Amino acid sequence: MAQVKVYGRRDVWSGRQWEISDALQACLVSAWGIPEDKRFHRFFLMDADDFVCPQRSERYLIVEVVCFTGRSDEAKRALVRAVSAVFDDVEITIIEMPMVNWGIRGVPAEELSLPYKVDV
Image (cartoon, rainbow, N blue to C red; front, top):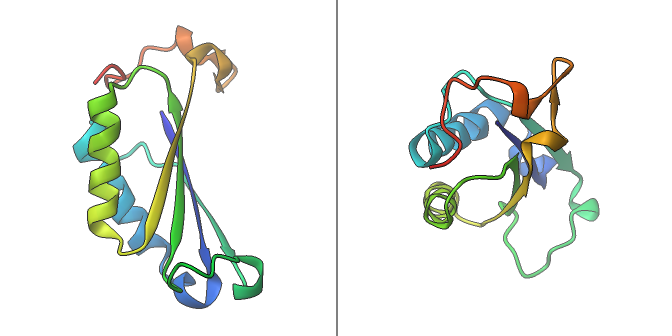
């Protein structure tokens, strides 16, 4: 499981959410083996005055990936490299938590049988 939050400027990225989502999903599929159909992406597009980062370009994106613990450091590095290769001005944060902290359809995630590996 990986949930993705994307922060950026509305005047630059509005209307391009599927383009961004497709690129990020391709990175997750290649780096972590996430199934293509397991896509949970949320967009937080802000007015320029609400996204203050003067040392960055107007195309700057912040990507947060919230996921189960278990991926190797190398897998995390691979995701960072993949995302950075796609977007010019991006920062990515990977936030991990134990499966017991997730509830999916009323079941703790640690009790689910996942169709993909987390320990990559």
